[in-house]
Amino acid sequence: MSRINRARIVDGDDVTAASLNDRFDDFSQAGALDQFNTRDGAVDLPQLAKTGFQAPFMQVDDLGKSDLLHAAPVSDSAKGTTPGSFSVLQDGAANPTIATYTGGLSITTNDVLRVYWSLSVAAELSGTPWALGLQYNTITGTGGGGNLDVSTSAGCFAAWLQWDVTDATLTNWTEVPGQGDFQTLIGGGYYGNTLQNCGATTIIPLWSVWMRNVNNGDSSSGTTEETRDAGWRGVSGSWHYVSGFTRTIYGLRVVILGVMHPYRATTGGTNALVHDIAPAGGVSLQYTGGRLVTMVNRIK
Image 1: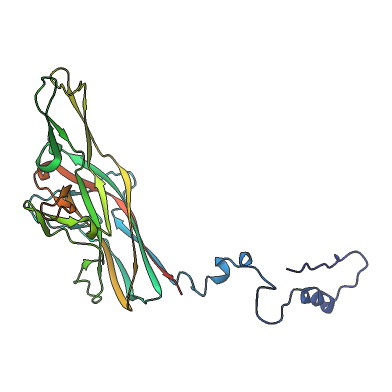
Image 2 (image 1 turned 45 degrees about the vertical axis):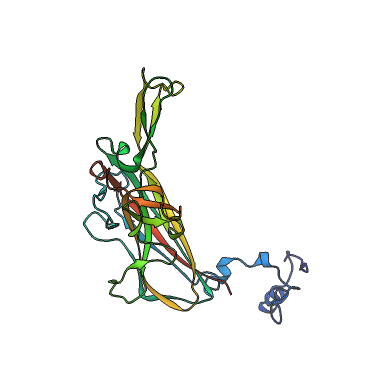
């Protein structure tokens, strides 16, 4: 760009309205902005905030219960029937926490819908849920110690995204595209989703189990099982969507279900995540607060 050079006002100079205006004439640019009089680095989001050209919509909603110190978290018990029914994240007073959009949020084929969410969670365990159902493997001892049951440490809750694209009554919730409802029979009597139908799923681990003093497969002397539940930490999820047509979204929410476990389907050998009811009596997921962020980006 050209450099504007104009001397400073000094003692003795005449200062009039006309002379002051003349100083600013140097900065007037006739015609449209183009590659000769501006650069992309000179244009930032504050200059474009009113146009909404890149992000015409953004909204932040609360999830769960606002409880910074985890004094009285919401507790969701693992489900003991299959196929299990999910729970909607609540605020602690049995009120579902969801994102709603006044008049509906319309997206077109030129938009990318981006959803991000977060939550503070912790596992609450009793008994030995990590040694039930699919949660452990039996390892044959090679040193005379006999067989050893070792937890997979893969027990988890699944959290996933649902929306209502029917109307503002919010009575027609369904899974978002690419996401299943964990109600499909996978095989062996287990219900869940194949991994290809987990496009909006977040996994929440529940525990870690390991063995001490196992010597070359021998667990006969001094072997102890060490266990640690997954304490308070933040989890998050995201989902991006490009629609093939114009559609209106009336609500978004996050739901949870556990205990889940990885599983290799007997038919077709498909990798899946299934509901394992055996540990249900000893597992709950505690949670407090988080956020759900809805953003629309325009791609052209």
